[in-house]
Image (cartoon, rainbow, N blue to C red):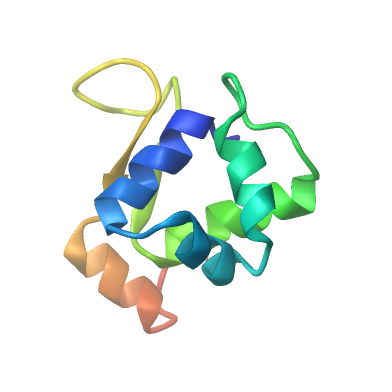
Length: 95
């Protein structure tokens, strides 16, 4: 679903700290700290992982999976295209 490295990279792209991400996702800072200290894929309660992924998505982060179209290979993160971000923020994103 998401790796610890993707979480840290997403926060760096957004310029936010662990506390801010925790607030955005509605979870505790220690939970974010545990997730980011994981090796490889983050393990945890599926609902908690979904909250983090959703918070990053709402903030304009696109998670890149192993098989996602990208110039490079492997997992990563990137900012969404501006028109995609604004449409989603206005409730007009793809369902």
